[in-house]
Image (tube, rainbow, N blue to C red):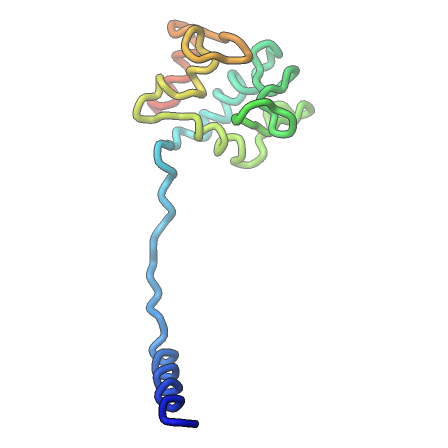
Length: 144
C-alpha cells in the first residue's frame, strides 16, 4: 500500500471509531393547518350524526356512497361497513376527517362548509343551515 492509501485507511478508521452522534428530533409535528379536536366526540357525534347518519339522504357514506373509501367520488374518503355502521377502522376516519378542518377558523372548515347551505358547492346538496342544531353540534366539537 502506498503512502496515500495508508493515510486514507487511517482517516477512514478514525472516522469509524468516532461514530456519529444520535440526535433526538422529537415527535413529528402535526401537518400545517391541521388540528385534533376530541376524537371521542368525533366517533360518538360527528361520525354517527353527520358522516354516517342513519338517514340515507344525509349520510356521506351510506346509499349514495359519495365519500366511501372504496368507491367514493371526492377527496374525503371514509371507511364504512354497512353491517356495522358505527364501526370505525381504527383512527383512519378521524385522520381523514381532520384534514378538512381549520381550527383557527372552525366555521371555514370544509367538513362544515360543504354540506352547509349556500357556502360551498356540494354534490350531495345543502344538508343544514348556519342556525341549525347540526351547525351548533359541529362547532361544539372545537370547544371541548
